[in-house]
Image (cartoon, rainbow, N blue to C red; front, side, top):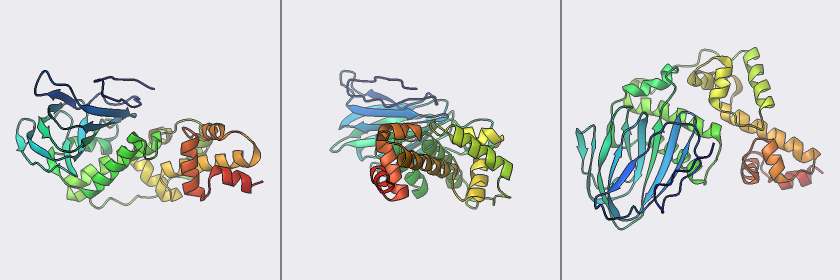
Length: 309
């Protein structure tokens, strides 16, 4: 579903789907000033993301919503302060590669004086299904202001690339990254999660057959990890671990490989346009097909069609 949300004349809003209704609220400290920033947003089933790019200015901000908040900062402020729940306070100036986390029900607010360079904040709002206890455990993680964590940073950067168009734009891929963020948040907060419990067995042959039949029948449509987990009545976390234990691939990698197999079959047996091949195989457009095909097969779809006769 597409939905536009015009904040200012300088705002640029991305594609929006169903997801938590949460965002960073920005306000000029001087009422007569304009808001010099660009915003791009996108949301999925239970998470949303926003990339905010800010020109030199002085802004107040606040985050409070029905979702947990995780942000990656890339800016140096000449002045400012930030508080969580009106208590924990920081006046740190160099916030490059620093992270902030606030669980559901917490508030983050403050002000920044941005000067001398384009600054950015990439924020993810997480509202995992309450029926999935493993995912809901992040509600017990305490808020943390301006910390560092290499794994969380790397996953956030992958999700940011999906949002800004430089990475893979795929529903299941974004959803998988969201699940990975939930796990890494738990690991960052509690050392007892640093060693995951081993998967006790994988999926049964019947379960794997149901997954394959579902993917085959819906290959041209959006297939989310939640769709596959629900098919077997499993939590998303248990499903991902059990599936990889059985198949050797994550559910996302499996679906992607099946899309490529369909594309290869169409390319070798028809003269459909690349745009039509992409849609039939479940890719958003010919550009995504070309990028993924080349990565997994080693040649472009055009070259594959030519070589297959």
